[in-house]
Length: 232
Image (cartoon, rainbow, N blue to C red):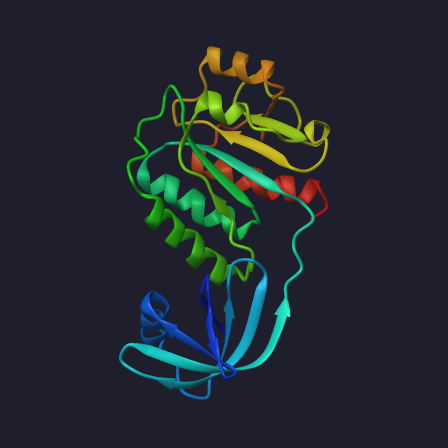
């Protein structure tokens, strides 16, 4: 059975024990954690503590630290620029992007976006945390506040890719180094004006094949292929 992971952005450590409360304490209760069980605690910045559960109360749990370490950071910085799409599809893309190793996520509004950003930052962050726990990624991806399309294409990156169902070339020649910023458009696709603006900002149109992928699928497949081609 996999070791349970606990995320604490600012761990409370005293006398060799970590205090676990709030949402993470509730998750331990739901997961039926037991006294004496080994867990791991991470802070999203690469710090990881192996600990043994000492007690589980109604409001908090205590775990005694047995080992601490610094996880190795990935060599490649992969930034996903994700257009606003249907809520369920957007959140699926967030979850799976973490699993494939995306290091930063930038939501933005495209011309054909069919959803508004609204105030969902806390929910999105929780999705990232749960995905990081499940996939054992000890560095939590950065989640930017929603941007405009123009703000997104003005970001600096060594490799700038715009995944497109038309006029796109192969992926590998478009990768010039890290960071890699790849853009995923909305369900309705990119407008001609957006593609022209992105090219002028240094982006290369890239195709993932002859078939037309859903936006959330393209976000996941694109992130995984970039990691593979970059040797990560």
